[in-house]
Length: 209
Length: 209
Ligand SMILES: Cc1cc2nc3c(=O)[nH]c(=O)nc-3n(C[C@H](O)[C@H](O)[C@H](O)COP(=O)(O)OP(=O)(O)OC[C@H]3O[C@@H](n4cnc5c(N)ncnc54)[C@H](O)[C@@H]3O)c2cc1C
Ligand SMILES: Cc1cc2nc3c(=O)[nH]c(=O)nc-3n(C[C@H](O)[C@H](O)[C@H](O)COP(=O)(O)OP(=O)(O)OC[C@H]3O[C@@H](n4cnc5c(N)ncnc54)[C@H](O)[C@@H]3O)c2cc1C
Ligand code: HEM
Ligand code: HEM
Image (tube, rainbow over all chains, first blue to last red; front, side, top):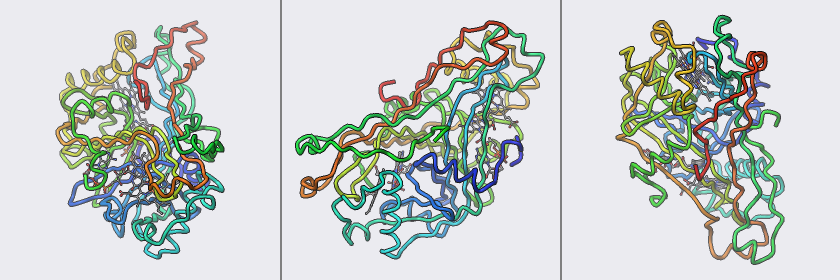
């Protein structure tokens, strides 16, 4: 962390908190010298962060046994100062560097996918039409260890030069919030009168999650 | 676009709409063989997407004259099916590949930073304490052409196998929404009684923005 050293955090608990607060990330890999950044879903435990996709996906293929970066970001606010220069944002982000490992064992893969589902919708997995061996075969999970993770956080009001404070223009923060809205049943749920929509257990981008 | 071809879009207008709806992105670059993905703010015109940062930032340095990827993502909903396998998400995303170009001319750099501000807070730039030559000198803008951009979009209800529909579990979508909340003035604004907080002209992640 070259700049804003005070914004860098490497504590495991800080990193876990940021990962706990979301479920989508951006994964960076290199394919023939070109970096790619693709959005994807994630889940995690104490040791690793995980992503999943098709066995035929380039994102998954390129993520196995290769240098990888996974970044999770929560943008909490825009920060407005009296000078253009000191405008900023409040945020919490984690970047994880390392080598991806493809989970090839079918049982381990299924167990991980179950964890992915349970994290978002506790209790749902066991109520679903059970996964088939072919479905597991078509799917890959990539694990990336959290050993090389760093967090960066900015919070609080504007921070600017004393002598600019008299400038008569508004300063402060404009918060942003991601909310989970009311579930929308599909025609099948409506038809069968199934109205017990699950509750999403992860509240993305909420500061006090 | 290897999979879900129907979800791929290369029209300029589709790409512009997705870029119009946000202001933060993830930039991917390669540093000594390691991909990095960092969150950052962006703005754009018909030709290019732009990011800014310190002249001393590794992100900025590594983005100049090098293969780059900038990705903009709006996660609109989680999509729940009766099988685990067909769960999905509704989203709009753009990835832009290419070579970054550092804007070194001070006037061009200042003009771009003004556009960044004007896009978010129209009229604000001219009311601020004017930027100084030293501030411009400390700042770099990177431009990435939109010529190699692709969009991927998923919308609508669950899509799954006919024979799973009788399974008695809820299916549908759970929408997510990013909202801009009420501005919070800092002590200086409160002290001087300045209460004309600017309106953020970009509504991130809103489908109908
Ligand atoms: C919020 C969100 C969550 C997602 N979650 C998952 C997930 O959990 N698992 C999963 O497998 N996929 C997920 N995706 C889709 C993922 O981003 C990739 O599109 C997908 O994995 C296919 O990757 P690929 O390498 O096979 O792409 P290919 O089909 O090989 O890509 C070909 C070209 O299409 C472009 N492209 C690929 N993906 C995108 C994109 N998302 N946006 C714009 N252009 C693109 C790239 O420029 C690429 O060069 C998610 C997408 C979003 C937006
Ligand atoms: C929502 C958002 C918007 C941002 N907008 C801008 C912007 O417009 N301009 C700008 O210059 N910067 C912006 N940043 C900060 C940006 O992500 C980088 O932290 C910053 O540019 C410094 O980059 P660097 O390459 O000099 O990092 P260095 O200080 O060289 O990084 C050293 C190490 O710290 C880690 N690191 C760096 N950045 C982050 C991070 N964000 N999260 C976790 N770990 C990190 C990396 O692992 C890296 O190896 C924004 C961040 C967020 C979350
Ligand atoms: C809408 C206006 C702007 C916003 C929202 C904004 C936001 C940001 C953010 C979020 C960062 C990252 C800070 C961090 O690492 O935590 C940043 C960095 C930076 N910005 Fe801006 N910015 C704006 C305008 C400007 C302007 C006009 C200039 C120059 C005149 C400028 C110069 C810089 C510089 C030099 C850095 C790097 C700081 C450092 O690492 O030392 N910004 N900006
Ligand atoms: C919480 C549960 C899950 C969610 C929210 C989820 C979400 C997603 C999303 C968003 C995609 C990307 C689709 C696209 O490119 O537009 C995807 C792809 C995929 N998922 Fe899942 N998924 C879940 C569980 C599972 C499970 C349990 C399996 C396997 C048993 C699975 C197998 C796959 C496969 C194979 C793909 C690639 C599809 C393709 O490109 O052909 N998913 N998933």
